[in-house]
Length: 147
Image (cartoon, rainbow, N blue to C red; front, side, top):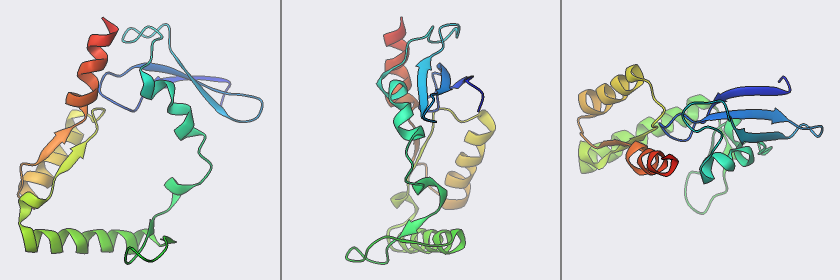
């Protein structure tokens, strides 16, 4: 990573500009991009704390872990095993409780095409209208706060 990179915050649909730096200890720091037209350098509490997620060295995001019941510890599994288990659980829940027992909560940062795919999956394949995004919860308050 070069000393300074500009990008977009991943938390909501506002699209705030952030500047990512690495310090001499190889830790990532985050600050608002003062030249960005959306947030002009300001960040909400989520954006200000983005570095905690980026600096997490637990590697949890690199591989799936699961437990087979609540009393067992988490253990690393392959992606195939994790996805097969996810499919099996979704199928069982839908068979027992119907498609409206499933809901999707999507990111406010999705592109139009990504929303289309998620909607097709949810409404066309699973058969439920239970879909929402964090835009209503996060983005609206951030936009008002920046005025």
